[in-house]
Amino acid sequence: MKLNFIKYILGYFLIISFSPISSNANVIVFEEIVCEIKINEKNKTMFFLDVADTSEKRNYGLMNREFINPNSGMLFIWKDLQKRTFWMKNTNFDLDLFFLDKEGQVIEIYKKAKALSEDIIYSKIKAMYVLELGANQHQIKKGDKLNCGYLNL
Image 1 (cartoon, rainbow, N blue to C red):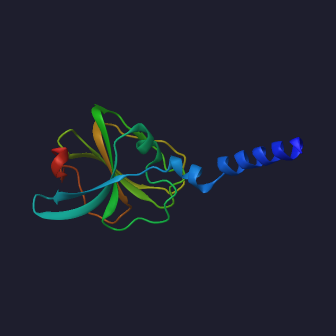
Image 2 (cartoon, rainbow, N blue to C red; image 1 turned 120 degrees about the vertical axis):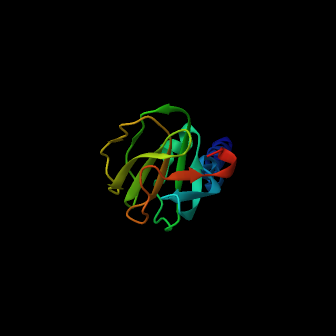
């Protein structure tokens, strides 16, 4: 009888520790914001961006997603200007990376980062923000500016 009780208790703890409720505790939730980019000081394009403003969110980025909508992406945010590094591990689609200064101006572009690549992408210039969008979908150039309202960009 005592042995059955111990098996019952152990079984209960195993079920609890592997339940779907506990596995969802590590789900990363991104805030979505709407931003616009002035392209060539004339045209404006609106984007729906997930904000990666913590180490955990920046490390996870766009990994494990199956697709990205044309006017969607991710905005990586830091509190300082530094040279930034990225990779495409577990990212299932090619991306363009736009490195931005503290005013939100595009200062460097890395085109067509390859899906699933573990090669390191290095910025040559110090950036405070990095915008990731689907590869070859936008005509954004150096000097174009991102405006995100509450971020004061």
